[in-house]
Amino acid sequence: MKILAIESSCDETAASVVEDGRKVLSNVVASQVEEHKIYGGVVPEIASRRHAEAISGVVDKALSDASLTLDDIDAVAVTYAPGLIGALLVGVNYAKGLAYSKKLPLIPVHHLRSHIAANYITHQELKPPFFCLVVSGGNTAMVEVKDYTDFKIIGRTRDDAAGEALDKAARSMGIPYPGGLNMDRLAKNGDSTAFKFPVPKVEGCPYDFSFSGLKTSVINIIHNAEQKGVEINKADLGASFQKAVSDCLCRNVLKAMEDTRHKTLVVAGGVSANSVLRKALTELCEKKKYKLYLPELSLCGDNAVMVGSQGYYEYLSGNIAGLELNAFAGKNIEEK
Image (cartoon, rainbow, N blue to C red; front, side, top):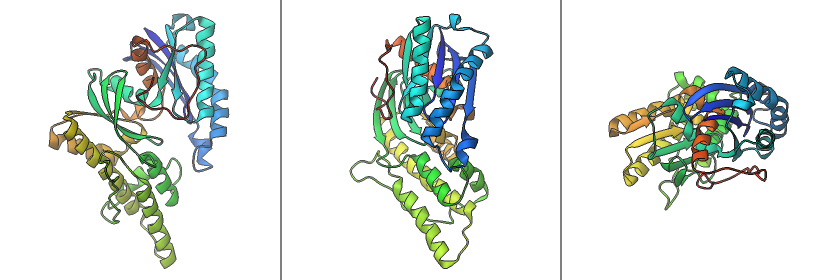
């Protein structure tokens, strides 16, 4: 089964053709990073406009790269939630038009479900059930993946997502957008013990995360240094901040996996590309003898390959939408 997949939840316009949920026939991504870099972050209105400009060309190239036409496609899958509402609507409406014109099934795909599915491409042998840490710019959650379309949230962030905290800390430090990525690069030569950060906890909810306090702490460190006329070593501060975020994630993952007795950890989302987190989780899993699955770096960020992969399993479960399909800025991963 060949699925044409479309992704437009944030600032990447992407299209891909995926066969039977595991075989990538094409993968096209048009990034807006350089334009949003001017503003230090994604501007939703600009993102929506650029999606509208790019989507036809991106889809055409995905079909061309796969040496296919729309007549060879069996279904259309599209990210419909969560994300920037204007950006999502561009992809959803384009997908609806294609599906209607060619009388193809329209498959709605949840963005976080598709991030998890990126691991099905990287690791062909991977199958549910497993425990998953979803960690990105807009979301941070621990999820039990009971089956390809059956999810249970174990813990989630109460405020900022981990990626959002990394980006905002980087911005406070004067590190250019994309902040998390550039902080990771800068911090490779830094001392992760140079600065101390609080250990965030959510009382009564040991699996939940809170990153707003860490973000506030880094801002206070910068302001105190400015008031004293002291220059901060950005590499050291970045390394220390990344370690604090990573430690928080690893601590909750360990407790949740021990309590649920899972032995397989899958990591998904844009922050799964962070070198500090990847190293920490690798060491944790080696120590506890857990199996660890990480997506290849090219599939950590937003792409349509992951949408096509998850779309296949949504189709098999009967999750087909009509032309009434709408986009949602926020939606629980447990809901269809």
